[in-house]
Length: 327
Picture 1 (cartoon, rainbow, N blue to C red):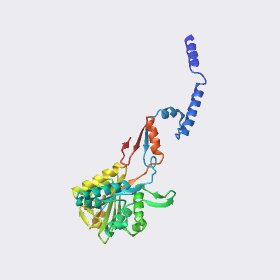
Picture 2: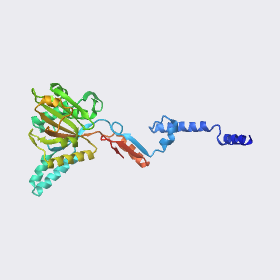
Picture 3: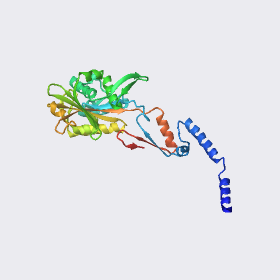
Picture 4: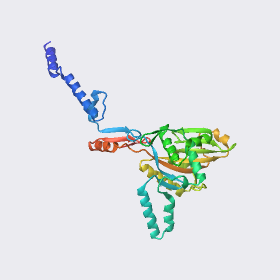
């Protein structure tokens, strides 16, 4: 009994009655301090964990970025384009002059032919290429553009990537709604995460049609055996041009852009293709149209916030569109 009384006495002395209250008050004060730093903690006991964090894992789209996707770069009809890239214009001008200075006119002509100084406009294309590109984007999409928002923003109903492509053709002075309503869509092949593409089958005549396909740029490029040139002619897609396309995809991805490939197929037997579970099939000839590089600009406060985290020894990781985690 004496031992038990001594044990109780030691416990009472070692743990004062006011200790739990003191800990609760301290945690509540810490919660208020962290709330002022825009760090909301719901469970007070988590303050210590949050205060000792060494890694922050965050979603990218809409959290670190503005979730306002726009087409910033592209590859159309065998030519690379950058939206308002002043540095690229200077580089191309310098390269063009150097080629002329050393007498390599063919190289200078190739440089001038291969690049646009900005995202092209309607007058840069012949009617056949322009109409095919616009139909491929407008018809093979389920997104809608809604009302205008402040700061020159437009409400996107549905997939934000598709919304960026619809805004791109709107800059080309095309009403995507009219294009959709005028098209006789026979079947939509929904996006497949396994194949990373989606398609839309459109009737052109009684048993002929067009199959518009878009998806991951490298997968779409691998499917293609031909490409449509600027004048609307269809030419073979050789290995050198494929390497050129993949090089542009790598450059755009390295700049943090989401790359989407666009292609189409001419269908001679509409009923047969309509019965397929997935299209295009292996026996169909797929024609390359282009690639768009979509940018989602970071929020203004994000660079400074990430810099401060890194200065404090905290590693910031975020999830990118392909599913990988970048730190």
